[in-house]
Image (cartoon, rainbow, N blue to C red; front, side, top):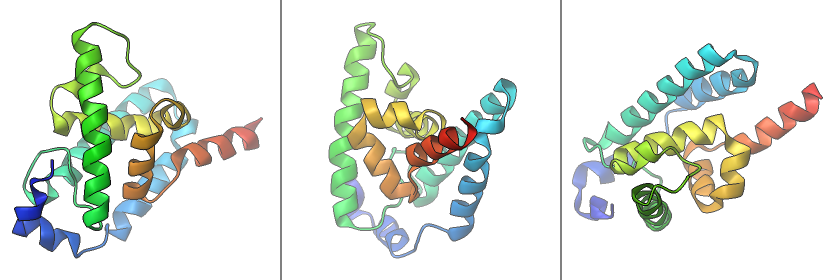
Length: 157
């Protein structure tokens, strides 16, 4: 995952900010997520995974590493995601139950897509069970989905 250092294209992408219109789209859809019925949630979860794949491939590689802000972000991403990915593979191969869908153990690109889905779909549980992974996704998506879900729950109850 750290091959980005030698990748000129990825370095050029690093110079750009995460597109504001994408952030607004995510915030709009996720803010309404809790109001959706189960069929609508499944459709949105599929869209979030596709969106994650698109973000991942912005640099021309489907490798589970979207364009990040700086070198430190890449180092943190690599450390956390590699550890979580390997853990998911090991647990999946042993038939152990995992919080993240075992499909994420297929490859790094699917891991990122599954992690993104859970970040938006089950943020409070993800924050509790996979705090470091949750934190790198908070940094990437620039939003705290667990706090938003908690605030929504407090508002509804």
